[in-house]
Length: 156
Image 1: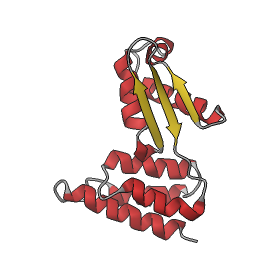
Image 2 (image 1 turned 60 degrees about the vertical axis):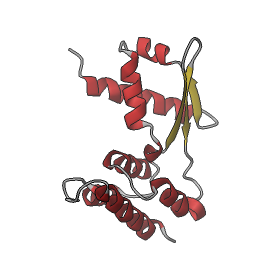
Image 3 (image 1 turned 90 degrees about the horizontal axis):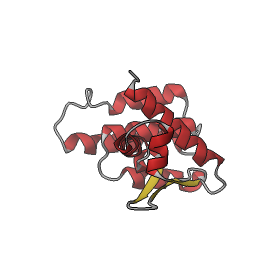
């Protein structure tokens, strides 16, 4: 039996590689083609897109269904440091779920805006097991903490 998380990892790596190789930081693929390529059901593709290609992970995903439908994945650029802090704070908003916060931290690490040590500290600070308050206050507190860490680490 194939490990589902491994399929998800493979799909994520494949899509990220395609985006990186694209001159415009965007790709268009068909969900059915991906499902055939990875020998999985289309809902597995949906799962990967939802959990690993959200705005919190640094991507916009547009989906068109029906015959000839496609998925467009656009990487949100983080290459202009002067606007980076403001853009990230706007992206985080007033509240952020743990998965989106972790995705954003992962992207900052991948783009080398933060170190592995900083990423570990940031993940620990936004962990739901540490933030022991109810929702929606937990997601609001997570957003405040994440914004404070980003401002502290990235300001010039």
